[in-house]
Length: 111
Image (cartoon, rainbow, N blue to C red; front, side, top):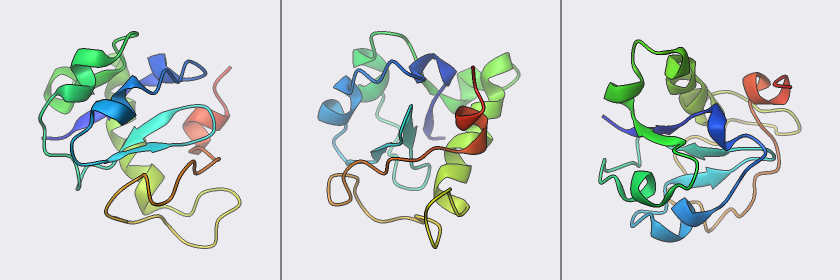
């Protein structure tokens, strides 16, 4: 099971998780960070450094109000985001792409 980043990260992108992730699977949207569920190795490094507790194992999120973020994190990679021509897919590392600069509809519409 991969880790996900919940809504607690929205507009509070600390970026500590980016520095700590050993596989570079955390991508930066406009208002929130996203973990690629295929690239994540489930090490928990992001959870340990997140100052707002937004990085959580999917197992712990399932069945809670934050469960929607499991699907949302995957959607960031699997759907065509606003301003892009194709889905991100599994690029093999966030640092090569840099800041993506757009978000999923769930985050874009969040207050």
